[in-house]
Amino acid sequence: MACSRTNRHITRRSGMQAFASLVGVLLLTLASPLHAEAADPYPSAARSYMVVLDDQLLWQRAPTLRLQPASLAKLLTALIALDSNWNAERWITVSKYAASVPPSRLGLKAGEQVTAGAALAAMLVRSANDACRALVESISADLNAFRAQMNARAVRLGMSDSNFVDPCGFDATGQYSTATDLLKLARAARAVPLIAHLAALPEAQLTTHAGRTIKFTSTNALLGRLAGTQGLKTGNTSQAGQCLIAYVRRQGHDVWLVMLGGTERWWLAHGMIEDAFGSILAN
Image (cartoon, rainbow, N blue to C red; front, side):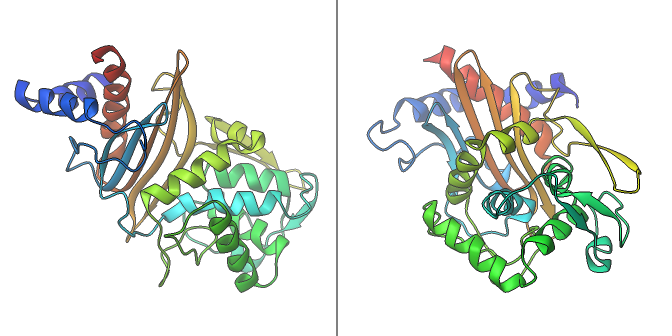
């Protein structure tokens, strides 16, 4: 990723545009930061996005627009998995169906066995759909029951404008979420130490019961490239477009970026996050 190109593009605004963005930040309502009106300095970055600095909403675009969440839904699936008599050492068998799902995937073979912990890692680091399906099937043979658990958990998290249908985030009729709701999910997921640890890994590996070792890298291109990045999840489907939840921490400050229906997400996200940290100095 060409960081210099990123910064040149994002900061190439006229003096008046930059001033307007800064004014938008200064006019935020502190009493209710995540519900205040905020500036939209990146109208072409995504169909919907939110940038939050230290619990203060900086910028947003259509944060309540209902869109497919893609693999961001895997964060909710991870929460359900960890609440289901979790045993990371439990061996699970990959079904023919799980082995046949489309990318992103590890290339697991039907009949292979991996531990639940390895499947969770592959699901969160590589966003592997074969690992996700195998893990979900090992928890519940009834997909409708698993969906019900997902949506019940979403309600408890305060995600009042979401409905999940596919645990791995494939596009599905009747499935939707919003940037506002997904930020709530992201915060809850990152509060779980195991999820926070896995989401921040740039690479990992697993070994099947038969001894086959599979190495995999994170789908999050910000890891190792943008200072302070600690995850959290990526997604991309034909209907959802490029999606991202990024969490970055520097010198005691936190930035969250939720992006749905994005375009050229990596260098745009890089610049948006850098601008968010830059606003600290501006103020």
